[in-house]
Amino acid sequence: MKLKQLSVFLENAPGRLYEATHALGEAGLNMRSLCICDTFGFGVLRILVSDVVKARRVFMEKQLPARVDDVVAVEIEDTPGSLADGVLKLFLETKVNVEYMYALAGTGTSTGKAVMVFRFSDNDLAIEILQGNNVKILDAESFGILENP
Image (cartoon, one colour):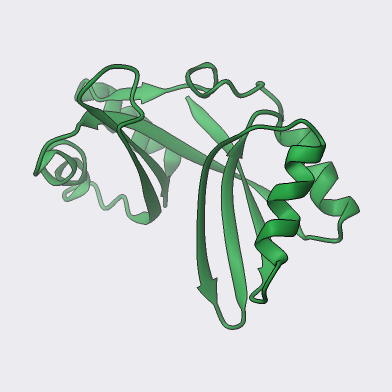
């Protein structure tokens, strides 16, 4: 139920994001989701890609440091309050922390759904809690991602 996400460290300079995404395209890799945030002169590109192993190799060849992180993607109603009441509230008493997340609105498996990608302080416990509360967790196949490392 965990997805493999690449975290790529990019110099915060013009053309670096282009270089990373262009390299993936040239290698025939499809980006399934992407989020970038900046920190101290660098950007962290968080990306779900069709083939994690191949993408990591591409980034390393371009001298772009990349690591593989586990994340959890859930599908929720695309309505006001569904994130807070349908997902985040479940973690109040268990002390599971959301380290980061990003949203993919309008990309769920059916109309009226949104997808949220999370990195939790304890992904395994978070999955257990989500499953126990009937929250739909998306697998690699849902994103067209090869199951690798």
